[in-house]
Length: 326
Ligand code: PBG
Image 1 (cartoon, rainbow, N blue to C red):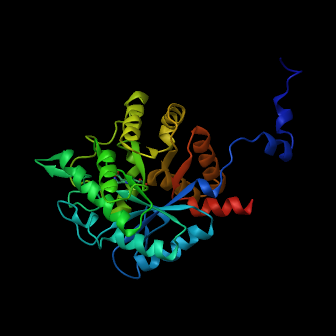
Image 2: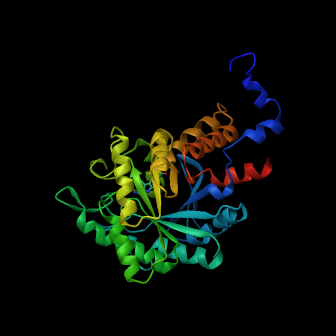
Image 3: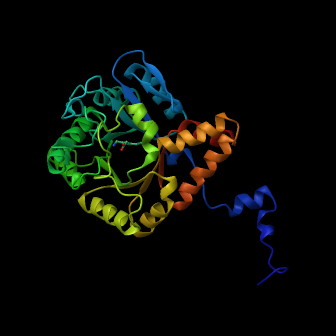
């Protein structure tokens, strides 16, 4: 049926009609707020390339976590910045490591807040890679044991969900097995399944001090030029190995992957609106070049429409506030 019988503008005529035909609904429940815990006391240090995001010592982390609770955000994800790094990244799985401290403090104060921990070695190794190094190579299989130890130590400290972000083969199975052996059969694994070697992680590496000291991560993170089939295989393997939630990361340049994963699998899909994506929006907003609220809400709506069931984003507190206002 053509014009003038059909007029698409009829369904856009008033706010009431537009609300009726709207299908994508963003709520605070969709959000996961990333936070950086740094060893020390009284530290609240803003990250230069991420205005509004801070490195927080455990005492300063609590008031920030409380903001998430009060905003109705169900979950945070914690990254740790240790005071010492070494070759094997041992502070990553130390019982009194920074993430372990932060988790137990937050869970004690806000038991209802879902606490996710990023499981990786790059923030803890002196070389900045996500695995054990030998002869300039990142060894897959000997890394698995350290990742499993890290995950167990996070869960012992109280983490509800562990999120391996290293991209080693077999790490979900290794973590599932280690957790089950310790009796943590109900702990959720949120796997960074389709994680690309991306230029958009730059500001995060400033925040976490986790830039690789030689080479890059292309031998373990995915090639942006690889096809959807490779992403689907990664996701399929992670689900087979026991992942409960799968993730696509970064988000904005990979919306086709989000949609493909959502269509193919019956598993909740998380997407990570990463540091570089945040930095771009913030920079333009600070210049007055874009309307930050409109642009952020539009991006989040796009991510939901693409198939995201949950979104990790540094904009989380602002989004929750904007949603409340409207
Ligand atoms: C650790 C990790 C990274 C991010 C999340 N977990 C950095 C990386 O892989 O280099 C990036 C998150 C962001 O950019 O916001 N492996």
